[in-house]
Image (cartoon, rainbow, N blue to C red; front, side, top):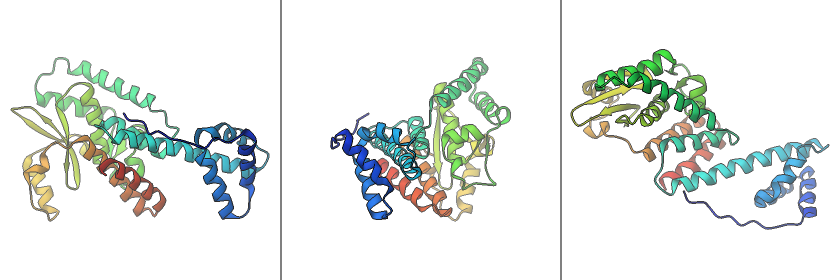
Length: 285
């Protein structure tokens, strides 16, 4: 992964402390200019802002907290920029998207959770040889035993799109539940890919002889090609065989971000929608 090089102006200790004291300025434009100057210092300003979290002045404490959060958010964005410049990995990208909402998110417990889920399922699949049997046990484990399900009652909730929240709540939308399905399948080297049909994301177990279409949003229901065609045509679109082709990781991540943009826009959270537009611009240019 490429790392973005950054150059920051180096200021003496006393000047940085003086800037932080100026955060109390009641003039909004002046305060914003001071904040921008502190942010431009990058990591050099971090220890001073952390110290300011305990300042007796409430305005300085609050401003320091906000600036530290912005610094962490910008760091995640720079990581995503570097990530987007080369071949992307779905799981890594999904967790970076999650960190865009929570820059302090520790992804290690979630990766460990996925590892444990895959290990448990791997034991059960050790003697299962047919695609039908493998798909049945994978879906039964995730949806019947662990309780993952589609959130049809609160579909536009952004939590449905952040992979950590999907793992926490066991609720998601088609693409995020499909992502969980894929994370487990990839750990077990199963030939399962994402399928980005218009309006509904699914997965597919593919071999040279057989394709099984799986709907994680509906508890791993096995779909026929005809059912997929009917879903598309009922929505007023013409069917195209390419709708069942495997979807590359970059396109999956872009679709996840578009879902977040749509959710935030519908909820009136325009700043968060604009922030995610910056992420998708990195990913697809």
